[in-house]
Image 1 (cartoon, rainbow, N blue to C red):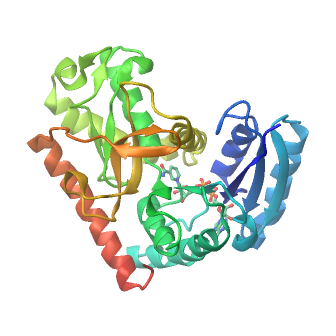
Image 2: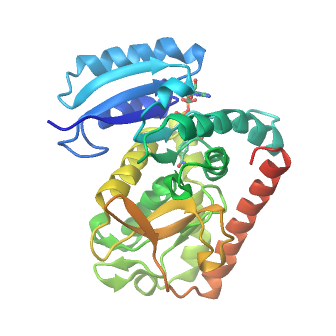
Length: 328
Ligand code: NAI
């Protein structure tokens, strides 16, 4: 039998954690033949609820789940971790300035990055879900100088999946017919869902839609503001779809993209497409054998250029702010 893969989940007692852990334990994260050991990291107030979730995980008798450990110590939680899903974060509360939000999250992601640096397995892969995800990933990465930078990623897969769903609905096509969609930039309201290189059943998506007004005034804002629309409708934030996207992100990273397709991941920029090196920005990527590569050579039209630049500018501002706070 295979040795179990150690998967650490932070914020395990939260909404996303509740939707995420059962799918990890049932084999959807890594594959139906890969046993997993779960490490749940919570703050002290969350430990009891995390223990309750662990009781339910036990009660599922998942054949692939070979152990659960619950802790409030990052050094324990990340010890030997192969995959780390950083979900727990400090939400923005009323009256909170951006600087306060970044500082509060720096207090979480800096020590977690250091614990990953000091204790995780050599093949560690990190996905940051907790917002502001891109900049939290940058903070964690900066605190982990011994881990290759490309192992730190931020989640834009939910935006990617939302965009595919909206495009399928608009064109009356199946989601499985849509390929090569891209989310560029920050996981925020400035993100840019790009359909100019996307294909619907092999035909160019932008040409099929042929409606730049819909693109600018409906599609892009609907995708970017979907999180707020869910809160408005459900009375709670999107948790199941966020957990699903986290599963997709890691599954694709580990198991590869399909031939002829790509996905979107927030990753440290190598300077491609004019995104300053080191910013954790979303790009079109292909994955293979546990590694990813930015899709090169795409032609970026003026419509796209302006929107990519605006989102990247926001990322640079967030980076400058956390630098000033001494967090990177
Ligand atoms: P939640 O508030 O239900 O759960 C967060 C959990 O994290 C709580 O149980 C809390 O005790 C825990 N936590 C806080 N600080 C911690 C720390 N230092 N170590 C370990 N655990 C800690 O929130 P929910 O709905 O589960 O969302 C989690 C995060 O994911 C939020 O920041 C949210 O904005 C973000 N999110 C990101 C998305 C994306 O597309 N990137 C999509 C949806 C949500």
